[in-house]
Length: 164
Image (cartoon, rainbow, N blue to C red; front, top):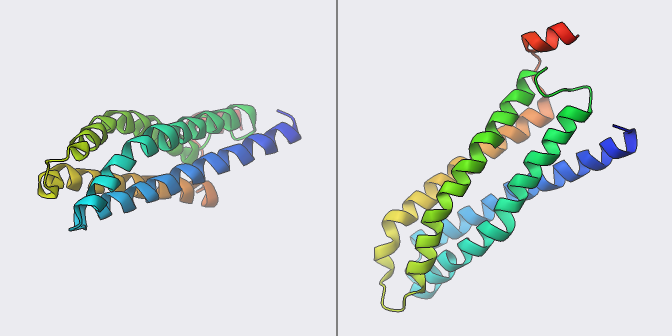
């Protein structure tokens, strides 16, 4: 990979990864608002907003972050299997994306339930807690990936030592 292409890919990866982290933080704020507000309109607005934010922001950013990270690892000296921190980030992405896609069912349920006019906000509390907890966990996991990217803890895999 040329230096210019590497920098462009790195820039894209940083933008997509930080965007993913920020959009999950925004999602968490909506989950908290939906869970704690006593105003039915705010509760409904929070849960109705979560579905398009998930499908049009979080999911595309997650895939873009994964793909650009994969390109960087395969196209640079870091390699995909040479360093433990890269493997950890790969595992984070490989586990986070399917969990996110599975979680869209709860998000869709909450959005469709919130759209009903006759529903009191208390009926949304059980799944609302699940949304807040999983968004918190996702935020922590993405922060760990960010920390790994910045600090790059030492430690090469056995494959990395052979290549070295």
